[in-house]
Amino acid sequence: MNRKTLAIIVGINVILVTTIVTLYFTVWLPSSSGDDGFLTITGLPTEDIKLNITQLESLPNISREYYLQGSETFSANYTGVSVFYLVTQVANYTENINVRVIASDNFAYTLSFDDINQTRDIIIAYKKNGEYMDGKSLDGEGPFRLVIPQRFPGEYNGQFCVKFVVVLEIIVVE
Image: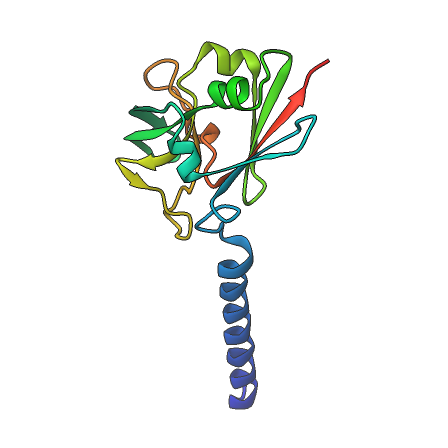
């Protein structure tokens, strides 16, 4: 292989890597503020409800230690609002619904009404260990995260705890 061919190959690789990194940080990586820092509740008979962090903080909150086990295992003190409260008191639904929790990268997890009614410590967290969660870094989780407590010690629950939450979609079950 001659030098000219090698220089062309290196140049193409540099362009590709630069393009991929740029796309990653501008298109894929979740915003530090969700949809400008809002949690949107959709699927309502009227208009959507948008709540910012200040509005969520004004609602009754839960702050406790949660254990998350998955690809990594850790415990942290999360603070947030119960999904049950958001559904029953803010969106005014009391039965026959599912709640799809959707992240800014479109990853989603669906909870039944029975799930949120039986385990009222399922929260949309806005703080971890007393600090607002970052959404603009590889280690970020926020600004909002679904946190589901373990039902028993050692349960793998981390894969259900959606990071970068932006939407709670109410799905009426007939």
